[in-house]
Amino acid sequence: MQLKETTMQKTLLNTNTDFEVRSLDSMCINESEIRHPWWHNLKYLAVGIIFGIILVKSEVVSWFRIQEMFRLQSFHMYGVIGSAVATGIISIQLIKKFGIKTLYGEPIAIHPKRFNKGQIYGGLLFGLGWALTGACPGPLYALIGTGAYVIAVVLLSAIAGTWVYGLVRDKMPH
Amino acid sequence: MLELIRSPWPWYIAGPLIGLMVPALLIMGNKIFGISSSLRHICAACVPGNISFFKYNWKLEAWNLFLVAGVLIGGFLAYRFLWNPNEIKLNPRLIQSLQQSGITHFDGLLPKDLFSFPALMTPRGLIFMLLGGFLVGFGTRYAGGCTSGHSIMGLSNLQLPSLVATVCFMAGGFIMTNLILPLLLKL
Image (cartoon, rainbow over all chains, first blue to last red; front, side, top):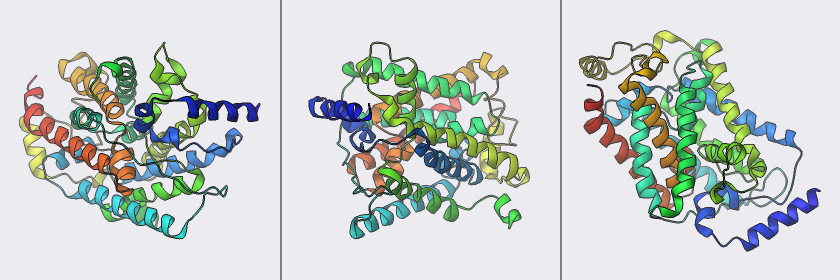
């Protein structure tokens, strides 16, 4: 069964000519050939828990902090994003330099992102929504966890937005 | 020690920790840090319709759903056990400006004037919650990622498209906050 799935996936990868879709979601390209039982995913749950705690404790989830950022009234958010990117750059350089492999011994591969107009139009639309809701997708989940249950409505609306994008994506400029 | 954890975390602690999500996920299993993809996987799992964009084996991406479930749990744990509500210090200029627009709640993480179940029945609430959420979902997928996937992951890998996306995220945010939001708050 597992072997079958792998072969199917391979065929899918080989016959998929819609590169645009795949470049939009590079996590699809970066698929490992190894299949694991479901509980291997618990480590990602743990990473998520840590991420959620950081988002709340650094007040990145605060609507007010996002307002301060877009009104240039606080350095906080710029510091968070800037130092996160700096750490990420150093980490990826180290991974590349020392050829660090995954826990399962596979080489780490990061596919480059391709430019398309969606990054401009979609980026602007997301920016408008980010300032309204005061939350990007990560904080939406974290906020629900803090007991702001009304944010579940915002999350459902975001899922609806993603769905509508899927519906009209062929008609949108890319 | 607990007191230190309970006080707000400065940017130079939180930022590098967030940056470490990138190598952690790569090393754990070649996973690309990103949160907004989860919205697509939820569509694919629950309401794929007959839309080709949602016809893929979402179970292969289940790790991403575990990640966001963790974010939700993390939010709960931080707020329940590590939260000190007295210490959110906002810029007085922000408070003053929002007060002029009729915002009265400055405690907590969200202004209850805009984000609450009763507010869902008001034009303001509909715009901030429903339209705002819709734009987040539509825009992130159109852009191919959100603050995590483009601004953190993409920039960490020195990707020019991610820089374009990040600049546009910020531009959209500045336009909304400074040009449109003052009008919306008058509703």
